[in-house]
Amino acid sequence: MRETAELEKITQVVEASLPDGAELVDARFSGGPLLTILVDRTDGPVDHEFCSRVVSAVSPSLEDEGYDGMIEVSSPGIERPLTKPEHFRRFVGKEAKVRTVEPLDGRRNFTGIIERTDEDGFVLKLPEGGAEVEMAFGSVSRANLKEDI
Image (cartoon, rainbow, N blue to C red; front, side, top):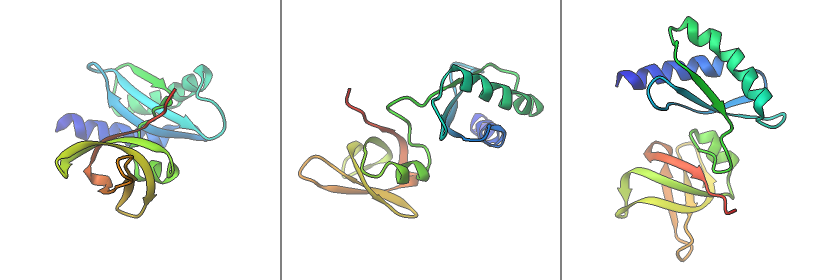
């Protein structure tokens, strides 16, 4: 519980410190004190130079909050995590893999097209016969875009 509260505080600090045009996709602890920050941007690629700018922007604020661990910044990748309701809204019409906290109709893993969203959740259209599953944002434990390469 303490790590969750600490991560929430760190996430707030990171979001407030990001350079213009940057969006925090996810922040998590990876292997002890390593803080992994996934960022996207609206005005260009998430390249090495941009990642360096993000580290330079967020490091002083994190140090002010008492975080002295290592920071890793990277792109969310092609199978981008969907961590906020805005992400589901942005990617309506795209295929996603979703895992729920509790089983829905006896299963927790779903893959389908994000059909539509509303204030509380989204509808995933499944490939099996075109069935639709309605999910609340709060019921999702993990979700990623699914890209076939």
